[in-house]
Length: 249
Image (tube, rainbow, N blue to C red; front, side, top):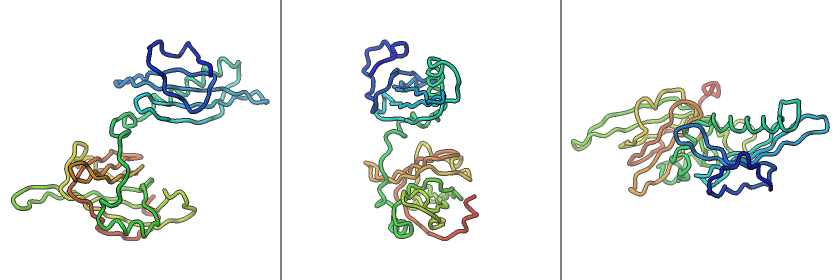
């Protein structure tokens, strides 16, 4: 593997090992407040018809893992060195356009879902045949309740999502169109407020996990709209109801 020394940092840090060999390898520092470093490998191929294709891999130093990879046609006609410069530019643009949440500690240290923390959660597995990530599910409704129990105030929250089972890797058609309503009791958290409940929101993933203090963490990573990250005493599946697929639009 050769290195493009024009782009490799002169600092003494060891670059993260890429999974493949590339003609060009260099370290890129993102132009934002965190200024995190990304190790990039890329290669430009020229087809018989003269068109170019570039392949690349991006590793982020702080996460010590692959951050992204791919291959794509390069819409360019001209000399190879200019094609390679354009490929570098396109890769760096992808890094600069990453949402800020992808660089957060929360995003890279998220726990795997523990379906056992959801009371009545067995119903979800029975309906879908697996435990969904709720990818592409829609948040239909968020309700916040202020209660007082034994002279102690607390906040409970109900979250209703519409999900079709489309995040199953073996899904080949229409899934079970269901509205699932969860109850979170005694809610707290730095990333929880009524503003986070604006609807509609589209979900990338929901994770439920047990914290060290025994409480349950609920991490709603959005495809669009604000994120929700909270912890609560209990999570309960209140209801599962069918819905018309048009409601998901």
